[in-house]
Length: 138
Image 1 (cartoon, one colour):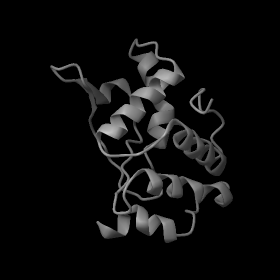
Image 2 (spheres, rainbow, N blue to C red):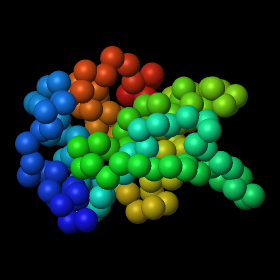
Image 3 (cartoon, one colour):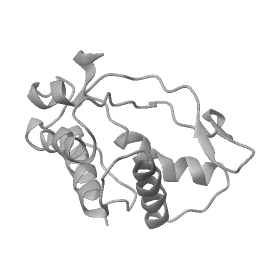
């Protein structure tokens, strides 16, 4: 899996599908700061309520994680999460979603801060042409 790590991504050119390669470099850089360079980024890419399950202890888990491409990060899942939660009947503010994400990431060893995560989200949106972060960047 060495070819799919953040370390490889940091040295690679922006993928062809990236709308603006300039801010794209900040996306893997912020990830490398928050995680270890040998991390393989995973993305869901099909996030919806049918792919969520609640464990008996109440924790929500995702099923069907499908991407190990190093140019796709979990950020798009984070951007999608507020809409998925609303669709599943949970009214959750952007601040609450960020807090949940930061707590879950920290529990798994990541060192995101609210500031660095918001910077990564803004860079991702600028690089990909994403029109809205649904308040997650505020």
